[in-house]
Length: 237
Image (cartoon, rainbow, N blue to C red; front, top):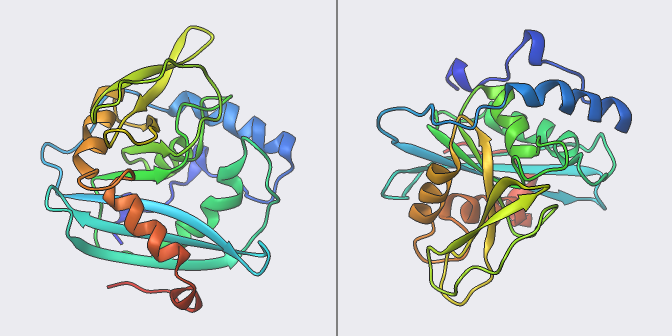
């Protein structure tokens, strides 16, 4: 894996075995590093999707990462990692439960993605530091949060046509977009993760949602993470 996609050290490094209070303090400390402006390569060639599942009654975290060519959306690389689950489920602290397995899967990739689509929140989070922000800051790479449900905020219902969206608001602040990726289908909650503006995040999610509600990188990652047959091993193709 290219060194630029390895977890950063120094000021952003931290332990995963922390209490909820310590985890919130880490989020508060790192959220100032999130960039909500575009800092992307001039040409996007590869887009990654990240999804996480669990097995053995939640004792094992199973993370899948797939890399697709862009804009072809053809599979280029994929990896699956299984690690013991270190943290219980706590709303707003999902990244501490899921990211250790995601980072293990990232280490198995051979292809460096230009941007990452994460099944989870970015800035649309109580402390403006959801899983997509956390991953982006740790890897110092562009990330986008794409969630199937709302964590916080209020919004008007977007029009039924694909590509329509309304702002997701919290205390008067735009924290994301409620985006219709298919006509007549429930919208997704898109938010900035790191080094991507909200308009660009919307554009990329729509470009990757060619046929289904979920953008193809996340849909492929979900399929890999949910495949019990593939859960017994880690793969890189």
